[in-house]
Image (cartoon, rainbow over all chains, first blue to last red; front, top):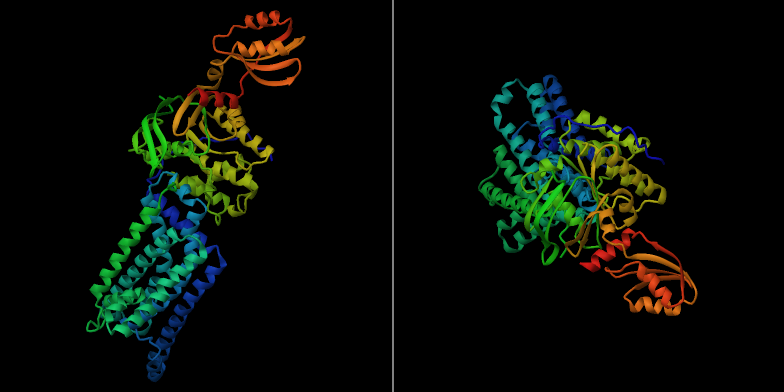
Length: 290
Length: 305
């Protein structure tokens, strides 16, 4: 193939601030995930639960008007519009998100370490903080898309269809809970995924490490709690920590049962700090040769 | 304004010293960076781009202080790394447009410019293919496109012809020549292929074990060395060659019984060939001064240093 030696155009226009690069990274990350069919299956699974709940709320709204008993029957399926129902819904959604992130982490972040993508990003007019922020926001957007946004949609639907607008005024804590639990899920999962993918970039080890954190740790925590008869061991279960913190946001946490929300928040804060340290120590354009 | 200036720059990776107290100033143009593996070429490129901060010293590129203005500098410099440095799931056009956006271009302009640059590099037909499936030659050109998209003043090229077939290499070198001569880009070309540098570059920077052993215009460096001659003669050579060697002349290659390539000492005068030939009853047919190729120049500079 002959390369054309004419036709090169000059470009000399005003440049945007480097922070715009964060948006470009987020958009590109989402494009990469949405371009793979396997991820659509997992996203579809997440949306299935949402559609199920959406349909039940719709049914309840229309059937209750005709027959109140059917409405009560449907409430057994947690279409109750209470804080604990939304917390349960978000927890179920978050489990699917964890599965999606286990596989997409290798594409979104691990690939940058395997294929030299970090050099590609850092040799442009951005700093590593822009790169890190872009990647974290990408993962956070995926988490929010499957957990927070559907929960918000259900909250709106419930308020609009099954009751008067007073529902929103009577249950403001649910909105706080959805946003708070959603934020906890997005922040913790994005930092944890980035830290693991940066150090274990290959797909299979990454999936094993990620699932180890969310499957092995809960089993270990439960076993240690049973052996030592000490509920503090439950802190090892990160899912549980996030769930308890989420329940606290919804105002449905039973504070009499240890560990409390503050302890869980402390554990998750320390974990996030550690992840951030691991991320920053790994994001550089040059491999250190010893 | 110099293209770049280094002031007592050193850099170490742990206990391994990659660059040692390098001080130099280089004028704009096409510069070839040569040296062995691990000589410090890639480290030098990354310091110039502000990707790594030197352990000691200061550096300036295009008038920007690399330490404090690295981000602005990267907006004016294009970098083509040796490694793939691609995002395999992205289409070629998206990858190049993203590079433009990360350099501060608005989305629409970056996309338009990506199409232009890909057409210029003859990648127009594959622009909507995931770049993970590109051939080696296409990947090299794609990396160049990503380095060129924001129209940089300076291009840092790390092994741009690595893995290319002869035609692809020829195309790439033509392109680099065109960028330098027709579009006024300065190039810093780091490669092991000295022929590439000979063809594209006007200046050369020789790095050896973390230090700069030689620097300047290739023509000027060659002019410092005028001691290589091809001699041919008629008559018995044995005595003639012995006398040449005892006079300090080095026999570089003997490709026939009546011709030899010799390297003379620095204070050598050509008439001494005739004197020695006359003593040995040899008739000299030809004394042809030889031009030193870049490989010889490289070895000579390394040895002299």
